[in-house]
Amino acid sequence: MANFGWTRGNKPAQTDDAASDLRGLTDPCAFLAALDKVVPRYLDLADNGVLVYPACKRKPGDLLGDSRAIWEHTRLEAMRYVPMVPRKDTSLLVDPARQTEMIDAFLRQRAHDNTVIDFTGTAIEDYGIAIYAALNWLNHCGATVGADPQKFSGTLRSFRKVMVVARQW
Image (cartoon, rainbow, N blue to C red; front, top):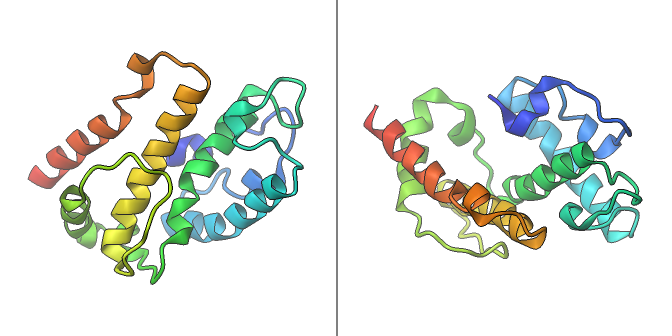
């Protein structure tokens, strides 16, 4: 599991306790448990003005304004939707026996471009909503920094294509 690169264990030039708990984790359950702790801590730092939020708006002179920290925090901002899911059922995300069920539920979700989301209270649907919101956050950040849309705008479309192929297997 790539976890957006967190499993590589590389340390950024400036240490950041908010994301450091995720580095090097390869067990999906441990990663999700750490995410439950890291997200509130990170959002608290952002809410209290310690960090520029969203991370994609940081400048090199800002605290944790280096490119590695900005990328880590942008990923964390996108992943924040997963711990928000009410009535969690992490087996939908990590149990191979339930992957088909999760893929089918994700593909039933209608695509949306919102990062503000309303959960239904049904874990399988809410994870799909959280995944869409996370991918939309990454698109939002790419547009905010003026990145070439050809480089990032197909993320959601590509993800859906991968899910369709996975379903066929």
